[in-house]
Figure 1 (cartoon, helix red, strand yellow):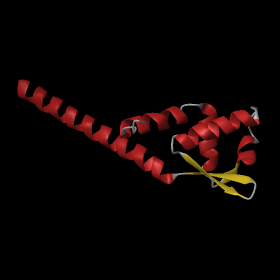
Figure 2 (cartoon, helix red, strand yellow):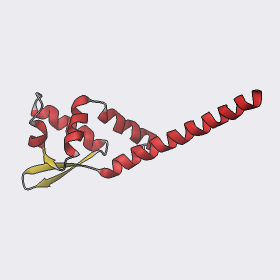
Figure 3 (cartoon, helix red, strand yellow):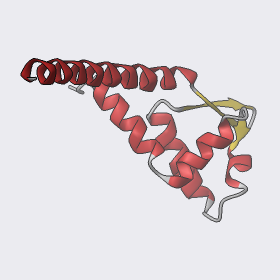
Figure 4 (cartoon, helix red, strand yellow):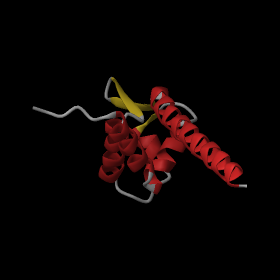
Length: 111
């Protein structure tokens, strides 16, 4: 039986995918709109199979999605993935704000 990844595991997968400079550059290019695999590979000095592996990692992380039109694969960003990351970052920010507030109150009590 396959284990269903937790939300933190999904966030980790996204950060792992974005941690590679080539994948991060691909995501920046996709921010301008859908592109073919060939278009995405053009500026890189790496093989097409390597680009395909990078695109697979981005798809598996839920960052990019692919759609086949005829014989051409079109890639685009999945905007929902960035909502997940933003929500996680907001939760983290809230946690730290609460911890800092508690620390501030502790210090003020000690004065």
